[in-house]
Length: 68
Ligand SMILES: [Zn+2]
Image 1: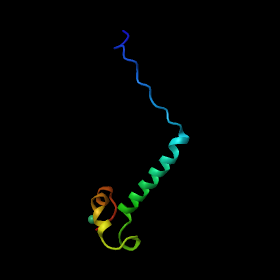
Image 2: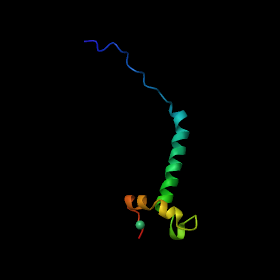
Image 3: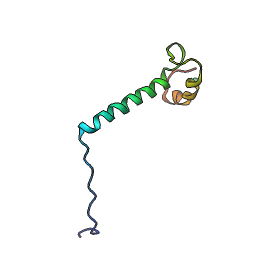
Image 4: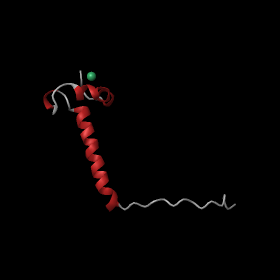
């Protein structure tokens, strides 16, 4: 039994040095998203009005942040 004769696909190897800046960038974007979902309301809001609050309202309830 030698399989189908198709050579196995080579997995790409990404060095940690190359992926680390992107991981940091993605983490910062994720933290910003959590900020808008969890804290962009009331006294700590950075943006006036309810636009951001209403836009992320369902996500706030889904994640269990206190809301109303
Ligand atoms: Zn709510």
